[in-house]
Structures are given as C-alpha cells and as structure tokens.
Image (cartoon, rainbow, N blue to C red; front, side, top):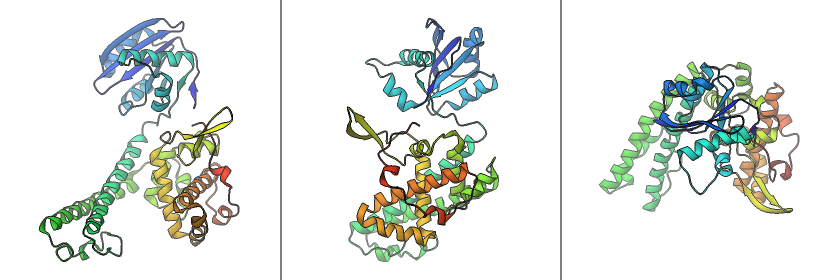
Length: 362
C-alpha cells in the first residue's frame, strides 16, 4: 500500500457521483474552509475552489466516473490523487456514512499522509484500454452462450459434442436431430444466433484495435509478442493493462498487482490465512491466465512441465504457478529490454516460497 505524503496549503476531498459531488476543503491546520454539495460539472467545481487554487491538491476515491475530474485537474495544472477504493474502505470505515462524512474523511486522509494511492491511468490511453476491456466482456458473453449449449446437452444426458463449438463447425450441429423438443431447439438456436452475431462484432472490434490502437512503446509490444501464444490482441491487452512496467519497483509488486500471488495474514508469528484476493488488476490476471493457456498450446516443454506438476499439486495449482512464472519472466524481460527466451525460462524452476506466501505492497 502506498500513501500520498506530500504537503500542500489546501486539501480538497471529493465524494464523487454521476450527477453530484460533495467537496470538502481543508487548510494545512485541518480547519474546514468549504463543505458543499454541488453539481458534478467542471464549472461548478472550478468556481468553488477558485479562491484556493494556489497550493491545492484534489483527492477522489476511485469509482467509474473519475475520468473527467482527472482530466480537468490536468488541464488546469492542479495536483490530482486517485484513492484506492478497497484500501480506503478499510481505513475510514465508520458507524455512520454519507457524502459529507466521506468527503471530509478523504480530505483528512490527504492531509494526514494516509491517503492510499491508486494508479491514475493517463488520458489518451485509457480509452483504448476500456475498449479492450469491452472486447473481453463480449468474448465472455460468447463463451457463456456456447457453454449453455453444452449444459443443455448434459441436462438431457446427450453425448458430448466431441469438439469445441467454433464459428467454423457451429453450422454442423444438427439441432433438430440432437434436441427433439421444440422449446429446447429454440433455446439452443437463440444461443447460437447471438454467438454468431458476437463473432462478427468481436472480429470487427479486433481489426479496429490492431489497426488503430496507439502503441507508444513499439519495442515493448514486440517483446511481448515473442512469448509463445501471445498474439496481436492479447499483446495489446497486456501492454495497456501494465502501461509501464517500470512503475513497479520489484517483481513482487508486479505479481501482486496482477493477482498472481497470495498475501499472507500474520499476527504474533501465527499465520491467519490469506487475503486481498480482490486487490489488484483483474483484467491483467485474466490476460496472464489466457497467455498461460496459449503458452501450453504452443510449447511442448510447458505441456511436459504441467503433466509432471499436475499429479502432485493439482491441475489448477500447476496452472497458477505457471502463470506466475510467466508473469515473472515478462517483468524481467521488459525491464531488461530483452526478448523472451524459452531456454532461459526453463533454466530454473522457482520454489514454492518464491511464488506463494509472500506479502507485497501494490
């Protein structure tokens, strides 16, 4: 956990919503100068803080609507700090809660040096990152539809399809012969029709991304694609979710941000379990999980390693270890500006202690 510790003349805490915002402004001594509910628009906010703009810092809890406020502060050269929502919930939990209380606590966390920082993704790149995340959502919706077709077959104890339902072989599925009830046939037909439509939407979206996505660091993008299985789209996902690997001081911080390690809770020398599973970047974890599956497809050595590890640790644990290893390799190769070397990757297997049971700061 990182905290904002810089000192300012004025501290502005904002409890932001879609249409309204509660603004609390403190001076260096902690006295409340402004505490008002206003409309969530640039003019209202700038007018409210106008007398205090010299030496002010603006802090807001991370929620879906922070983009415009961050851009406004950047445009007017006002220091802006984004607060980590999960860490802030743990710090300023209280019996009573409302917008005025929350905005006051945000301002006091800023002033006291206990404001937990989240990464404010820069303007100009987050638009493409959000489009990549939208593609991920559509891919999952398509997978859910195709999974439902298989579930319907299992409900009626029908033999498995034998191969994955892809766009190429979907037409070969003879629905009327496989499912005799008209309502069941209609249900499966609807699933396949929507999946067919999503195929076209996803293909068009991927073509747009590979053609128009802004890649500031082309070398980093090409290095990511040297990993077996990482193609154009998955390389873009990894690039945009990491943004700049140099912002992680250690490989442990990077693995923790990607949700690839478990953080141990200890007290008085006793382990109390693990926690923080939801803290980090869920999209980056998915990307590395996908990269691991593709790595297994393209690397015979990876398949042999999994066959050896799965009986001892279980297939799921083996995949988690391989994903963490792959992320560790990606971190080091990007920091050292080197291409992926599979011989070096398999040169030494990190022990269990290197992949689990550590506590890292995000």
